[in-house]
Image (tube, rainbow, N blue to C red; front, side, top):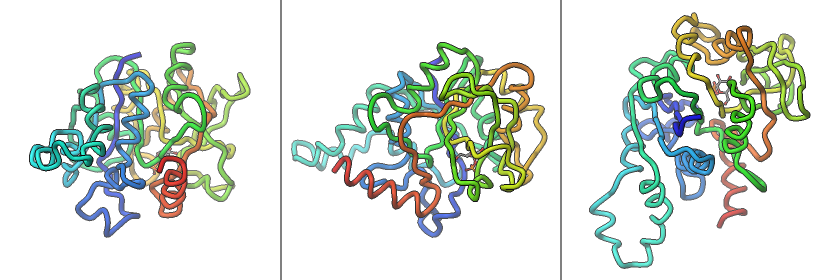
Length: 273
Ligand code: G1P
């Protein structure tokens, strides 16, 4: 397993307009920390240190966030406000950040393929920052998945049971249960109608991918919404070999929706502040 974690972060975040008109949705804060920072902290906790971020136009704020801000830091030097920058400084000292831009928005699969030059030929993790995952006790979700990868050596998607009237928002899997929290996937559908969904086990935004996914993605034709879907590429991988669905331990908030964002804010405020 490499130390690389890919963050597809080029999408517009239209559900949060006008807030996201000139600000990346990944920079929306849950209390006082942007979503992307929660994702990076989860990756670090999983032992990953090379953050590979797929950005797009108008998203430079993310690069600035993980860089020094000389004027600001000079201004607050020696004051008790420096404490607020401690966490981000530790991140900057322990990780590298590399960026590439997705020129056209052609789907999550296309975004992941755009990240190939930053990843190379090794297994890697993927975090969708608007799915905020918090461990209630023990390891974070990505750390759990990295551990599982070391045992099974194949692509893994995080899954969660969702109500049937919400399956249309997700990739949905079906598979054989090989442990009480692991499924060997036999079917995967992107954003099915409730009546066509193979189950209520939804994929959430954490993946471990083996690098053969890039060749598969290159040959994946656009699916739902005319976009190149990672779900379709993973289904191909499942047919040719093995893909696991892992029912993670922890809490997950859909911060791409207003309701999930508010829930996450209330939860984090109570837990951490
Ligand atoms: C993407 C994936 C979907 C997955 C979801 C998790 O969809 O395509 O399979 O269930 O992330 O958040 P999006 O939310 O980008 O539409």
